[in-house]
Image 1 (tube, rainbow, N blue to C red):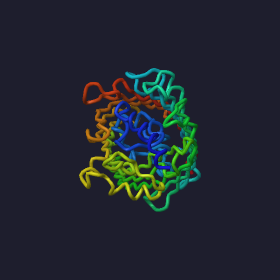
Image 2: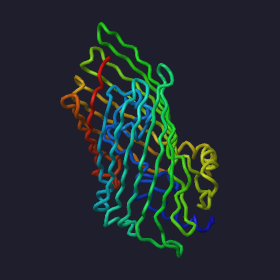
Image 3: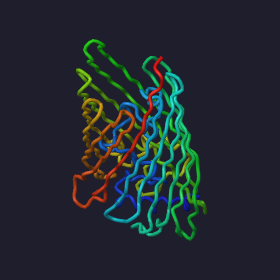
Image 4: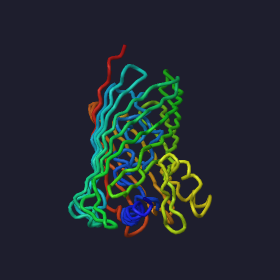
Length: 364
């Protein structure tokens, strides 16, 4: 079995430098499940585990949905990918949530990645990945929320023959477990508001995706933790600052480049201490995202951020910027753009665009 897992793992890993979206650890469905789809998160350095709730919490931390102010929210997002290397590769995301009273929320999302018809990796041409997700979020304490996401995942890499075996569409299921803590101190007389928050998510927990012929790959199981602060003196001007740390919970290949082939459950625990370079290399696998957001009168937002991964791993380093506008208190449009910090990055000319819609419930 290990001999058949290895060719697919090397194939996925060989795509990593061009994609600039891996951490040197081979996984299945890396693009679709690893890319933050919405523009708000992308504009703040891909940080969002502890940001204020919105319709796109379905992707990054579904536990926040029970804390959402609006009774209903929906969004659609679009991001072309690797535009300097290929035509037609893109990510699409659609989500919606509904509050069930004050303490619960349910949600659903559809995530789609199209490899295009002129992919730089050839054998990935005409491939598509799809994830259908359902979420439930509940408030468990005065300031504490938890969420559960269940996913059905389908991956079709297109036509390929690896190690004499034809690659077939792979299907699997996965789950996310998330938590969110938010503490707010607010003055009703002056409008001054200070809020701090913490978020934690373990995402894509599930069996390997099987591409047939004994070829399997781990899902990009990830641990993400983050914190944030939000302040406004009068309600007219608000500043939000957030930061995330994340790490793939997938074992690092050994010194000979051979990936671990145990169960996904064993792999999660092994991933914290298996790097050939010891503790130093484990720290190099941690990704850092941070960002800030300024809102004027809850109607217009400016955002900026920074994302960093060690150059000996993913080597994805870029500055992000974006803006958002709220119209008639129901509609919101957001845009983000990536500015790589080194020349020749395949992430040049990458942007995210999101449209959202919200409805408030009756106030009793």
